[in-house]
Image (cartoon, rainbow, N blue to C red; front, side):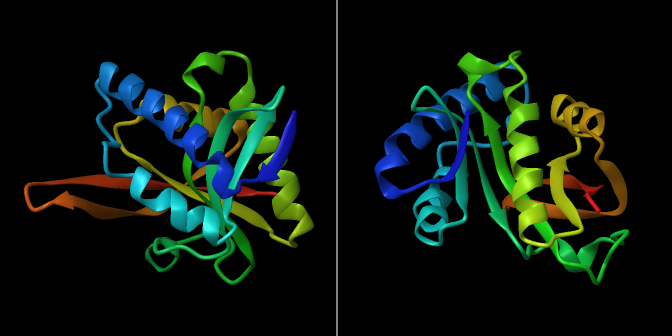
Length: 169
C-alpha cells in the first residue's frame, strides 16, 4: 500500500469514496456527513496539499485531511498542549475495503508522517454518537481528552464532538 498526498486528478475518486461512506453512515443511522460536507472541502484540502490517501493497486482505499493546527485546539485540555501535533479531519475508509485493516494501516502511515514531521501527538475529534469510530480510535490507542465542543450543522441542529489524542513520542 502506498501513502501519498492527493492531487486534483484524484478528486473524482475521492468524491466517489466519500459518497459511498456517506450512504453507509446514513444506512447505519449515523447521519454525520451529507451532500455538502465534507465534499465542499476537498478542492481546498487538495490545493493546500493537506489531503492524503492510502492506495492499493492504484485505487484510493482511504482518505483524510492532515494539518498542524485545528479549530478545536484551543477548546481541549490536551495532554501535550504546547507540543507540535498533527490533526486528522475527514478520515474515511472505502466501504468496499472495510474489514481488511485498511483503517489501521492508514493510521500507521499517518503516525509515521507525524513522526517525520516532529509531532509528539496525533489529535482528532469524533461526533459523540459515532460509536464505531470511537471504538476504532480507542482500539488503536487514542485516549479521550477532556473537553467537548458544539458544532452547528444549521440553525436547527447541532452535535457534540469528543476529542482524542495519541501520544507518539
